[in-house]
Length: 145
Image (cartoon, rainbow, N blue to C red; front, top):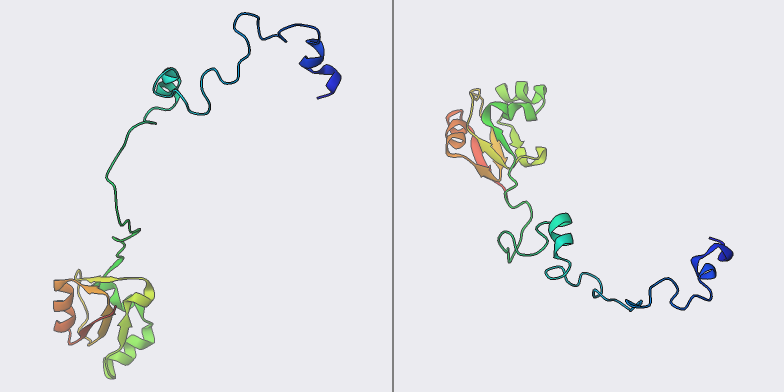
């Protein structure tokens, strides 16, 4: 804004510059910043910032993000992780190795029917039924860190 249009220019000569003679323009009459949130500014905080004060939840001393992250795959979907030629070769040759961790899975679950082709499955975790199904097909379960 141009200096000549400012309120200061208009107020020149007025004793209290528009701030009143009785109340006076003091530094910070209500306190600085968030002062008075639980006292004289309570209405504002209750109306526009509910839940600002107090605590909520449980303190986690050693907070680990995504500690429950465990993508799973079922035994009936194991063969989708390898190519079709690997599957045809597995029928006559030695057992192929399916590393589910390479495909982003951590745990193998035992749902579905597994074809009777021996296979070596590598995973971080196996369920009890998955282990039984893989061994029943003549395969093996290998734990990977």
